[in-house]
Image (cartoon, rainbow over all chains, first blue to last red; front, side):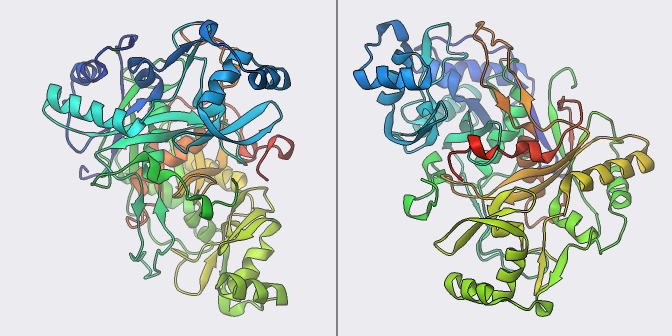
Length: 253
Length: 253
């Protein structure tokens, strides 16, 4: 952290449309270089899942999908393309809620989000669905290792997606994969300035980093990555899955 | 927004312990001046509710509380001080869930959060509970007007608190009151770079601003306010209550 404690959110521009199999870390490294900031191990690179999914070929052309009878049924009920519903079902291990034209799914990773994270916008063209990365932590680790190769420095990496949530309107950007940092900051056993023990304070800083970065991305700006400088992130090995609340402690599954 | 699109999160230090009735806007204006940044109408000042609640006298000394039989019962069930439970009940209009030692409440404002937002940490000493501001939008508007008086400029203002959420571990900072901005950014009718209409995209940017600011606050740093510079926030009149999902569209109440 710099002396003032200021944090900078720097959007990385000029990253080309990424095609399956292309070297995403090389593109990200070039964008960091072009931003003229260098790269530091204390930086956090926040990358939206859409560009990761594209590079990893996690795209489905809907015209190639043969929907099951249940997917056809869901399509009618929810007024959606049955082929899209089929793709969603294949990404789903449990349907959490299904009502008001919305399907809230638990993905094979354990994430709970609308449509199992399957998204038609920004997926590279009409009729193409983007899936979440198969293993977002591994995606983050690959990017981190690639940056180390290209830039000689390995910042922390956070992969994100924008999801809705209960009770509150609007979507927010959240972390689905991390590398080189712990996503939760635990204050357990520490005391606030009044000596009151902060026994319940565990802050999901990876989600806050994701949210912060989204402000510098914007959906229409097509900025897929943001460099966060000046945030003293929790060092250590971490996984996006540690952001998942254990089912036995979750009152809203 | 500056030409690079960079966003800065500047923690405001040196704000004294605020006592009930003190002029919080004057303290915030002084801290902005001390940071040497000036203030711009395009800035967003993010302020944690704790300092707002203190300035507004929203504090309860637990020794003055006479718990009802139900509060005593809850205290036994949840292993908590019955006087604390009484304060929580007085802030609650509906108990959403009550299990695993946790009470999720709907406050009189309509917010859904643990313990109706009643908090013992950082409340000014042991045995003191801080309540949420009675009208966080009004609190934000008062701060905004005070900054206009002291600095000649009125930035947007966001009042925040850190809350848990279903499905995901850890707390994150969210917006409970706003002034001078709209908390939701609607992409309805706009198109992504591929021409796909973003019909479902409403981003809760006030919550993302809250989350971003928390990174520069930190619980132990005792930084109650952060100036966000460079974010092109949605102009217009807004209310933190527009972040509340309508009950009929909420599958998890």
